[in-house]
Image (tube, rainbow, N blue to C red; front, side, top):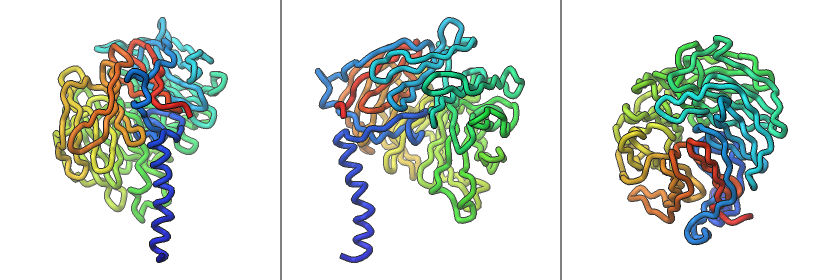
Length: 420
């Protein structure tokens, strides 16, 4: 065997093992933040509909967590989410296996029910024994993950630092080194994760609704190698690449959506970035080698995402297209060209994620659909209703349990894979 063949086998062997473990449902992961371990809607766990009794995942527990659109984070057997109850925003910590309340932190807040139910829109971020949250009005909390005790708090609106946008802040905190990155202000802000002290604030204009995203290291050029990773802030009227240490804008791509609804996170794919909104379609951008600008590789109407971000599998992106209040469709789009591969009507717009080798869809009315991500057509494996009402929040997947909620605060935990 040649040296190159041995090297190739050394690389492929772990991938083969990992693929086998995923397909067998033997990988268990925490879900510590918005959209999972890597903030991209992808889990190494699998969903096994062939094990569901009577074709439906078994209900493990349910709980009431208050009005809102906050998703769920799961770390060390604890589930964290937010909701609005009786004039207060609540950060909940529940036992992930039973739903039992372990602690709850309550702060007075407005409901903010303009054209929807209202309540918190951001998801708690759990990191190194701390829980970081932001509500619609700029109240930022750092809580002890075990006890719920306040480590520090900042009320950015009351301090006069930022002004909430029309539907309040919805971007979930991103922890990067010693910084808490937030999509507030003109193009983001950074707080010291230990003290809450403001490290930088980009300005006081209205923010976008998407969550901050790290630009993958694979996109870095030789000129920018070793520098601070770039953070993408989908602001109210532009995609802005910022230096997380200083807040300096490296480049800006204008992107104006009706009512400043830049909601879906930027999607990083290889050396490119996909941005999309409900009335502007999609753009695929490529950072310049110097890292101080972008080139538009394509601009198409094939994908117009309103709320939950799409997911990437291979060369394709899968997600909902169209305004959630009208007629949206599930679509598959080729990332290299922006061309539509297929569309599927009749599935209410909700969210999508990847679990192992399956596409997992929670539609906007609470139906769970498991399918093969195929660029030729949607190949359904199973579907079962697990909720009702408005279900826009992406679920979380950890240790074979899927945790999903509706806007009225009904949180259900169902088993989608056998216990390890």
